[in-house]
Image 1 (tube, rainbow over the protein chains, first blue to last red):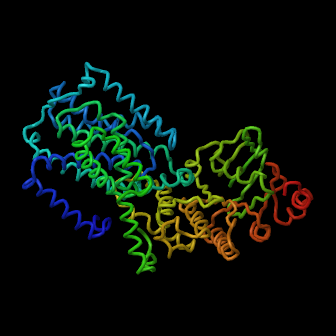
Image 2 (image 1 turned 45 degrees about the vertical axis):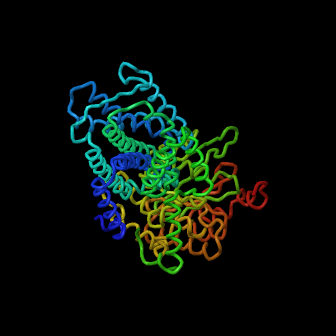
Image 3 (image 1 turned 135 degrees about the horizontal axis):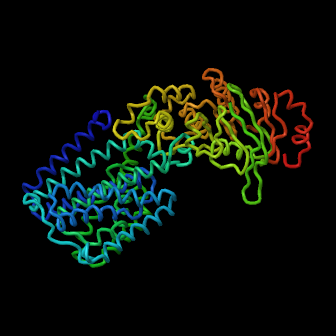
Length: 325
Length: 246
């Protein structure tokens, strides 16, 4: 089945990259193992947003909420109850998905920018609750020293755990995009009115997509909590949502792997930039401006365009070979 | 099959459709004609549920469908091709039609199977009857205007409709494209047994293809009858020969 979905050379390339990632902890300094873990978590977060943004055409401006809810769910369960760690980790995505269902239920009544504005408002509402409710969430202090099983507290342990979860999630998202639901979602992005006319309940499909995206955003939040063993309100602040949005746009929001690339670039830049300046958001703003002017389809979209142009020129009849896609 | 009774729809102060009547018999090719602004497109939008009527009743197979949402009306067997090419620009031609077939087969919430293995035969059959099979892998936005309009019809066919509504199917087409499109329409009616309701500016096409013609003016129905009856009607002659807004 996989063979039919992916070109063999991509499968080989993915295999090689994965093998490389598996070997890295044997030689690399701890700092790089940690940074790579952060990139994996952030990449999953960006991809979960792109599920609705790039594939659904849904302007989910405040996606970080689901990340934060996933992370806080883990933190709260592990610090306030005596439930085992794996229940906390499993609960995170489901609580995030439930939050997605509630926020999405209101938002799907609107479209385009109006959707985005309402989503920011409702998301900020969740943020303010987390930020001010000291008794439960610790307010702006957050929650620290979340107890985790021994093997997850080492950099290597966390690295492998995060890598495994991210690979499974990315695989699931890939299958989802290639399913009839994925095709329908892209059709809704292109032309919602036409979708209604061919018998698709657009709102319902959008809501399902939002819940799924919130679920995977929640998984990313859970992974953050296991990696950092602390959570803080910044995880659900809108600035982080903007950052994720930039990752998708930078990497290429009409490509599957674009957000991974975008996340890697942004995390690397943030790590480097914060050594020299406190004004990281300004750097982010400049990236965004340059992006809009020079790479409207993102880095991956730009590369794809180039490759397509190169392939097309010597084989003009290539597209005629048959039907299907 | 389809009955529209005394339908009324206003936008603010403007009454676009004002008591129109329409009957479409099973298997027929019915045309709606009238000057610009007569309310033809609004009437079609009312039938497919894009607008909710202020008054009046629409029945399909003797069941009331007035005011149902578009996806519900589509599921009952009415599909519509739009006046402007209303397609999915970033998807391939194949996917454009396939998505409609998925919706018709209630597959659009299938999360697990790979889409490209499903609904292939149905999609290919539609592309073939529309003459688009050799362009199946093209990205829809790269098609010519005429091909986009034909794809538009092909998407509507993906819903496996029993009643197909075409809004000016040949508008803006070259004479060759017009001929192709109209032969496609006739072939759909004859070989697939699809009932067709269309509106069209070109009177030669209307009088040569349609079995029944409904004439609209100022949102009202002047007459519905055979081409011969319509040709003889004095009001129609006035509307078209001496009409103020023709």
